[in-house]
Structure formats: C-alpha cells, structure tokens
Image (cartoon, rainbow, N blue to C red; front, side, top):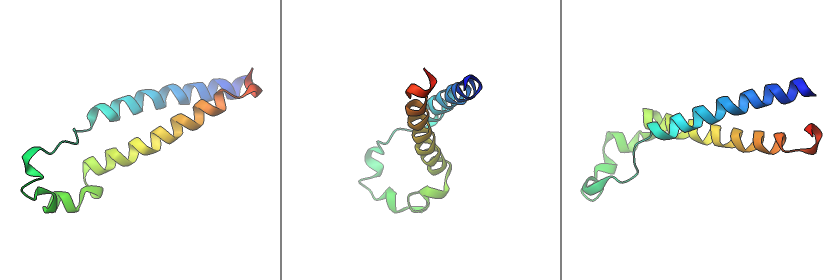
Length: 80
C-alpha cells in the first residue's frame, strides 16, 4: 500500500504543477468591446473548441477532475 500511496502522491504533485501552469497560460474571459461588435461570430468565435484556447479549457477541466479524484483517494483512511 505504501508504494501505491507514493505513486499517487507523485501523480498528484505533477497534476498540481500542470494545472497551475495551464491556468496561467489561459487568457482572460473579458473580450472588451470586441464582443459588443460581434467578434464572437468570427472564425475564432465559431471554432473556439478547436483552437489552442479550447484545448487549454478542455485540459483544465480534465486536470481539475483528476486533482479532485486524487485528493479524495489520498484522503481515504486506507492509506492512514
């Protein structure tokens, strides 16, 4: 059990660093006056899921879920 706990702690630490990095790489959500003029209907607004920003959002969600699952598993009384 001790080896499993060590492996999970290493994965947890890597996940924390990756999540912090990806959140810092993302741009702010305020589009400024561009959203009023209809910039959301441009090519980038329509294909946001396929852009780099879309990939960052998807990976942030994945890493956040992984963070929560690992935090719960590591907090179980099995490892105490």
